[in-house]
Amino acid sequence: FAAEMSASRFIKCVTVGDGAVGKTCMLISYTSNTFPTDYVPTVFDNFSANVVVDGNTVNLGLWDTAGQEDYNRLRPLSYRGADVFILAFSLISKASYENIAKKWIPELRHYAPGVPIILVGTKLDLRDDKQFFIDHPGAVPITTNQGEELKKLIGSPVYIECSSKTQQVHTLIIKFYLRCVFVYLWFV
Image (cartoon, rainbow, N blue to C red; front, side):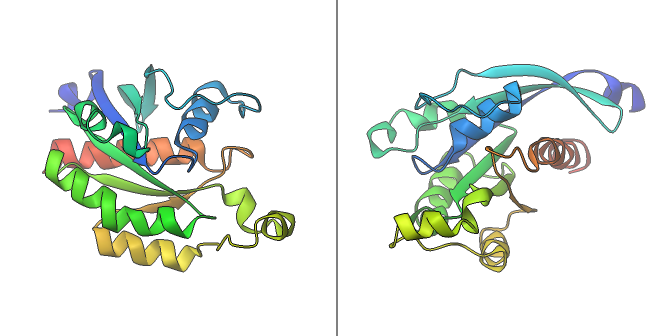
């Protein structure tokens, strides 16, 4: 068993959530250690890298999806073979927060039942940005407690908040995803 665990294993991690919540920026920021300041594509090219977690080498495949409704029929094609989902919402968008339970959980449960889901709140740097809320008077920040409540509601093992701009928590998120996948794949 120990020999099996040390062998490199491919893990497919698919990022899902509403359009404009920061999924692509999160992936670009994690893979390049930079925040994209100019054009951000709707979909990031799939990325693959070897990552070591707790002494285990994993070939991590990161897949991005487009959250816009135009992609409703195409998006589920990327779910096939997923080992884990990163389900993202923006900490400054109540609509994206509400769509987690209303839209995304039903879609993932339908197309990929039983695949673990890691809940991630993005744009953490903007939640306490007074100027942002002056410029966007309709925006409503989502609290950490609300994120934790949503985590329980959807049955996610973890809720993490991050900022792609400041690169807060990215490595932690990826390592936690992989730990969850190891537990799920090897011990369940």
